[in-house]
Length: 252
Ligand SMILES: Nc1ncnc2c1ncn2[C@@H]1O[C@H](COP(=O)(O)OP(=O)(O)O)[C@@H](O)[C@H]1O
Ligand SMILES: [Mg+2]
View: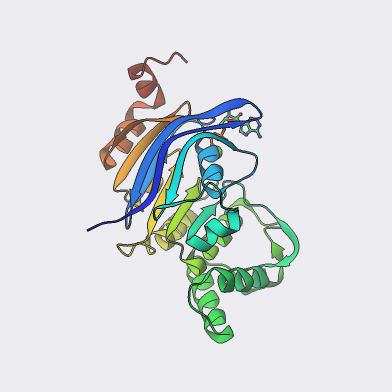
């Protein structure tokens, strides 16, 4: 029997007294891939940050449970330890911390089983090779001076190293050329093992050609307004967001 991994109930969130999320309900079972699609400004990134516990987002009401545990009281790093991971839309630079050091320290902290230095090195090398990340990147400060596409590859490398139970990926496809998109998408898709789950936040249907979602949700004005299977993303691509806004009676 499948098990609930993430359960969001009637979530209302605001930033500086502006209400951004207005009653989000979403349940992700183990092994499922969900795509969340919506226009710019609809609140997708706010949902992602709220799930990870960013202090800027104030939860006014509602619930977030991960494997049944209420995570609202937990700090971001505690949520990460439970197996939640956020791939940022705009990855942040950490000057002075090399990529290799960051990967080693975080993988060691987050891994449920001890990893030897040798295993770690081999695993980093293997994944970096698949993603086309040159070894010269390892000694550079994390995300400092890297191009948009390179940053997304580095994020994907972290994802592959940490192997979280739930990967929340915020517009991982933005700013990628076609080849980088395919490489990254395939690396993400290899996480699927029937137990790990993914919440893919994206504008475009094209990413979903590589990572085929079990469910697609349309986000509008801080809420999920429609849910369906893969074909909902194709409908959306063909008809545009205006179609759903008209259907929901929202003037643009
Ligand atoms: N730090 C902030 N202060 C004020 N408003 C914000 C802040 N961050 C986001 N918002 C607002 O919240 C809304 C949702 O933004 P966001 O979650 O980034 O949407 P999306 O990721 O769907 O493009 C937007 O109207 C945006 O202007
Ligand atoms: Mg966003």
